[in-house]
Amino acid sequence: MVLSDKGIKKALKEGHINIDPFVEENLQPASYDLHLGKTLLLFDRGNNSFIDIKKPMELLMVKHEIGEEGYILHPKEFILANIKEVTGVDDQHVGFLHGKSSLARIGLLIHATAGLLDPGNELRLTLEMYNLSPLPIKLYLDMKIAQITFERIDDKCERPYGSDGLNSKYKGDMVVKGSKMYKNYNYEKK
Image 1 (tube, rainbow, N blue to C red):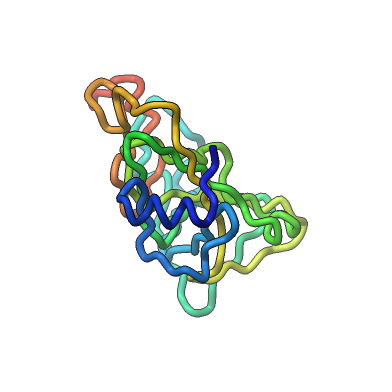
Image 2 (cartoon, rainbow, N blue to C red):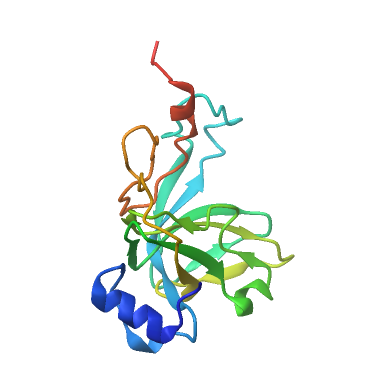
């Protein structure tokens, strides 16, 4: 069952979920508004001609920080960014990241597929942003960019995110990171 505004406040007080910083004015009837953090990762197309998912991708993207002037996301451009807030859930809750309707109406997608905050994880969620619009979209630091809903699962999970054997690649990330897909292939440098 999705937590209501009262349920979110109760779960925060009891330590089942975490939102830091928590500002009551961002609390919606059944969600919490999240804000765009300062760090972006952009594809380095000048030094990469393709993506090999079996190899480390540290050099695939370059870091950029949003300043007062904002960042212009061009049509068909894909970037990674962080949420400003740190969010977390215990082993009996899950979080779901959602876009904002007002931003979707101008063609901004804020997550391509990964919208799940697994039980046992606490981090700054990563946004996978894409501009579907025929026009550039200007993004600003601290703008309302997403919302999160929380649900209680039917029972405590046996192996929360980060448990041995789960290959949890993004446990506790506080800074946006590129794909670690290559770790699924037991990559070894040669």
